[in-house]
Amino acid sequence: MLACFSASFLGSAILYKCRVTETDIPFEYADKNVKMKALMKLQLLRRYERTAFTFERLCDEFGVTAVRGPRGVPYGLSEALKKE
Image 1 (cartoon, rainbow, N blue to C red):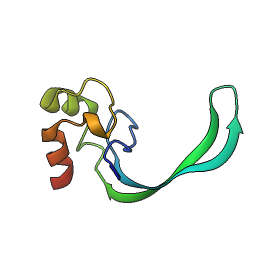
Image 2: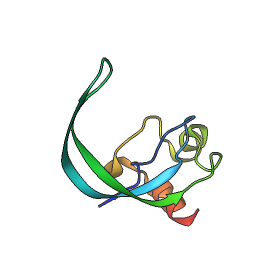
Image 3: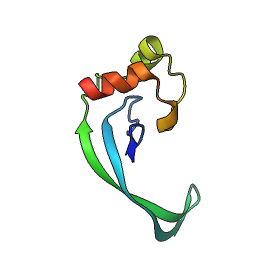
Image 4: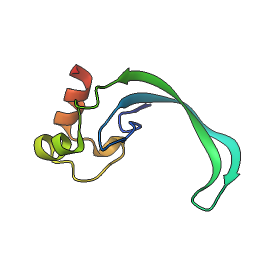
């Protein structure tokens, strides 16, 4: 399963493209901000430059106004992620 938007949004940009290699790994963690019961393992496929896919570019060129899952990636953005 390729998770294009298992991409990290740091400074409002896509930085990584990853593949999910394992899911539902038991893990208990909780603090005041988050509670987790399971994890997933990711394989790094590609790193992007901080300026390659900024949120501004995603909005202007691809019409992305919110972060979406892999099923919500516009075709043009999917193709651009493959090329760069």
